[in-house]
Length: 186
Image 1 (cartoon, rainbow, N blue to C red):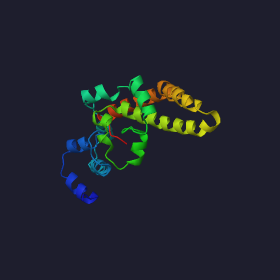
Image 2: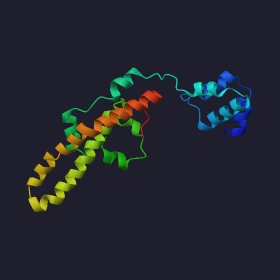
Image 3: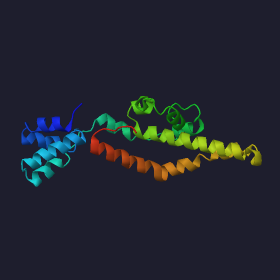
Image 4: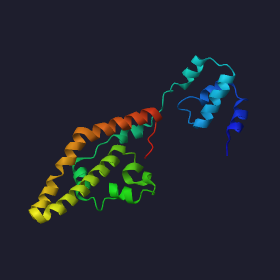
């Protein structure tokens, strides 16, 4: 295991330019490694301006295939499918909640980089489940028309997705990819 002391000893032997590379935001080093590199630079009396310049983010290279796939929206029929078929949906939010410890990156949309589709499939499955429960609870009072309410209820998550959810997710995904060059699943 790497200790702070071993890093201090190792970094003391490095050139100043190498230490400046370590403290770069996109360097991929741990917080401890960056903190030790900063301490060594300060001990060497490196100007604060040089350290701040090195801390600025270097341009991140983004995989073109990831960019192409990550913001692809579900079609209307896919949205309706996830709303209706939430019990058998292998990508749905219930599946994700039950199998939280499973490797989430292996779910079909995620495996192919369809980040927005993955979030939307969970969103529509969750609303499908919630409105199914509402329809079942109200079926005794309004009878068979409860299922028509359930089908018509698709308009609620569809409107929320179109007006609020999709734009918010798109901005979040774009920000994460522009900062990191990749997307890590929660």
